[in-house]
Length: 190
Image (tube, rainbow, N blue to C red):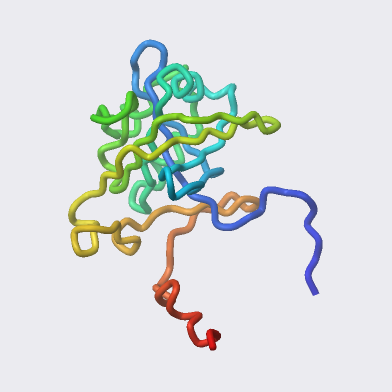
């Protein structure tokens, strides 16, 4: 029997992304966000929800751009730190030993040490309660070459992206490969 847990944000897993923008002084800033995902194939687009009170939010709105750096397992502490302190108070990237890199396609930085980066131009924003859902059109995806499959696709087993479990607030990473998508279910097709 299933137990009702109420209307809560307990969907699992949630991504652990460093969402980055330049602030009003042109300084690179990143925050951790877990509310987001792919939202369209054409145009290729991502969504991330950010509270307007966050320092990064103002930079995204000002420059109409943001990047998503996928946080890897080996930088879990640095990633967590980015979500604990405001960029208004200190240079979080410098303190965590992370390197901001200027995107060549949007007016936003990304984190060099993170193996997978998605560069987005802001195309929509929707106020939803305490968050604003930001929709970014993907302008480029960059991945460390040693983390690619056949030089074409990011390898999740090499990137080891962090995932977040709302409720318990734990970080995990991916497990073993289960099978091939759009293939395993063929046994049910007549």
